[in-house]
Length: 316
Ligand code: CUA
Image (cartoon, rainbow, N blue to C red; front, side, top):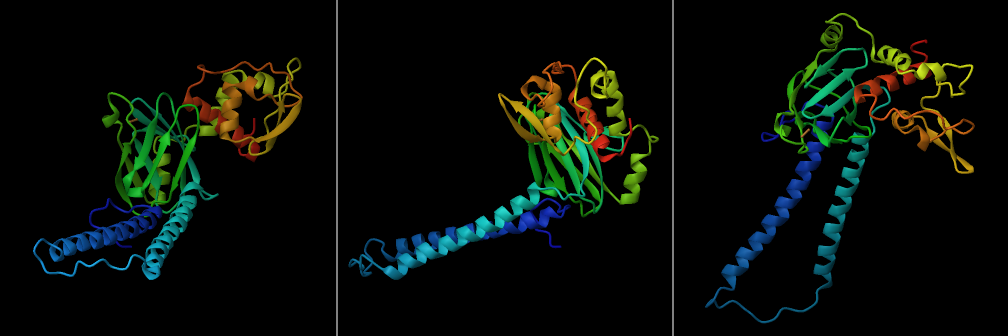
């Protein structure tokens, strides 16, 4: 793998791909800028005052020249469009086998929660050579999660989840920045990314003892916030059971009609915070809103729990 001297380290599979596109576009830009500048200079000299160059008017129309200045930029635009769109989709969609890590941004720190249970602040430990997916949200204002060495940057927004993925290719320690002005201490919202050998990463995960996993914690919160009272079968309250729901289409009452929504992270989050906005067909709109009562980190744990009972990872 080549390194361009002025660029940050290339430490993810995406980095060389993005750099190649960037250098290609830079090359096109520099080539045409220099060519135009050279023509300007040459004409300045050639047609300077007092020089005896031929100033008679050139022909007013040249089909050949028109073709050149239409066809060449058109080809270059299509190449850049196709290349960058392809790359955009590669970067947008995490591989199916990517390991999820939850990230919550807040003024002014990054909270990172690994699914196996360990959490950390302003640091992110990841294993070498494995695709990792970050599922991110903000507790307060807009932030932006930025790791230059991985060539990834994504806004982190309150009230919704955004994601990023990467596969580290080089063991080392890299910078992590907040790249969206978020208040007084924005410039201190920085951290370190540690890329470790997979065995070291496993050891790091269990270094402080094997605590409850993200999903197990979520199961505890599911009881603590009284979700279990209705959603695990109740004599008095009829609420949908949640086993096997994650990832499946859910029928939502929409006036007199029913439409289907996939039960993903966002849907579950909205169901907890804004239950009246998406009532499952056939059920009464009786669930209270948990807005301002559950922290973002706890929400992520409950979602991890609901996901796990769909995959049969943990039982009740
Ligand atoms: Cu968070 Cu800037």
